[in-house]
Image (cartoon, rainbow, N blue to C red):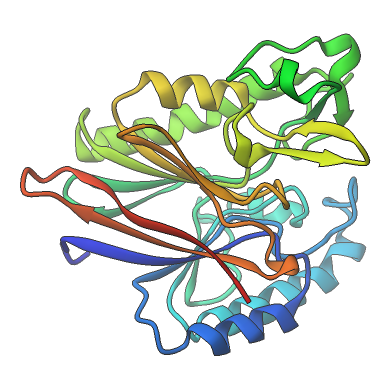
Length: 291
């Protein structure tokens, strides 16, 4: 680890097997100096409910390696698996380490990475069930409770407690997140600053809300949003999952959410963070870009 005063990240998410888009992206940004490449999951497109079928997923492992080999032309890849990734990337190997894709990529699911004495990346992949609402103006309330009898739309992975229990699924998600945050606090101290790298973001923010065939879909974690707003450690969540909800949201001066949008649709992001004279990290600039 080399302490710096700033970092620049290329951010991609939701590639869904589209290596041609990645090749186009690499060609476009090859002259820009990035410290790391962030990838927020759904790199490949394993069919829903087939994540654990090894006969099906083995071809996607090859696709995943090919995509990361392209991204590594830009820099070291730090990633978390999405709900369309093979199950093995949510598991540990015989040495209790995450299973890696390539030598120059780093699976950060339930892991931490130290960038600075007071700066850690906390990673968590996967998704919880997707919920739905019927009236955009009425339903768009930050982190509101859900009516589970009417609001379930799609299942999540691997955080999906049946029968379609959003809150119990979300409890599993936040349990893993809290355990991972505790690792960062144990290593870096209680006041450590955290950049969250996740597949899904907080429920009921614009970067996690899409409209599908006239129906509003909410793709986030309620407890992630609650935790993020209450804690002092986290200053930005970088996520994907909600394809057409790209954007950069400032909830208050020190709380930011960034979704670069779906790479398959030509979106990517550039994130700059910097340290001020008091040693506190914050967002320098955050850009949604297009191929």
